Image (tube, rainbow, N blue to C red; front, side, top):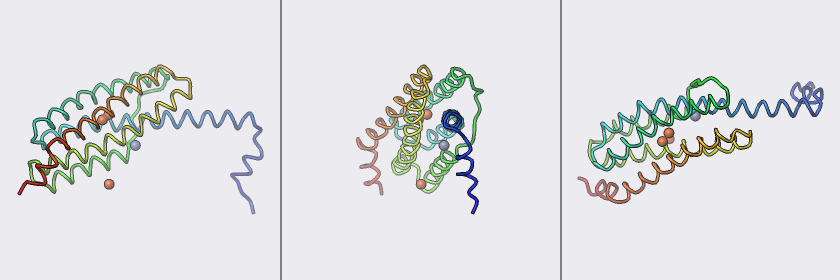
Length: 184
Ligand code: FE
Ligand code: ZN
Ligand code: FE
Ligand code: FE
């Protein structure tokens, strides 16, 4: 029985295989940059919808602040593309599209007020966690590839995503969750 995959492996010498692997890893890095570039752009449109739906002053402020950060993150990604000499290109992120859809569903299925606010925080934190996972990995990839300046920029965004997540937890636990539970 023919196995084309292992056949291809047998034909390549060690050197070629290694070069192919490095190319594949770099391509994986660039591909994921395109994915998060799409995601951040989508968030610049999705966060304003969350702001419109939120009622707590603190939540509106947190989301508005993170919207401004997100716009900067889009530009920072363009800087990363330029640093690694790649074209800034967006590739649809199915995960972020799904998370944004979930946020819309949560907002539709709750009444405006503290309960919807608790739901918005839930949805927003899922988004932040996806971003934290992505930027954590991109930072490691950039460092491994010797793209130190790109790594620095990716780490900056990573720390903003962590900050946004922590802030949302604080707001939820300070009063929104309790008020949502007590809401009639
Ligand atoms: Fe972001
Ligand atoms: Zn994605
Ligand atoms: Fe889900
Ligand atoms: Fe974020």
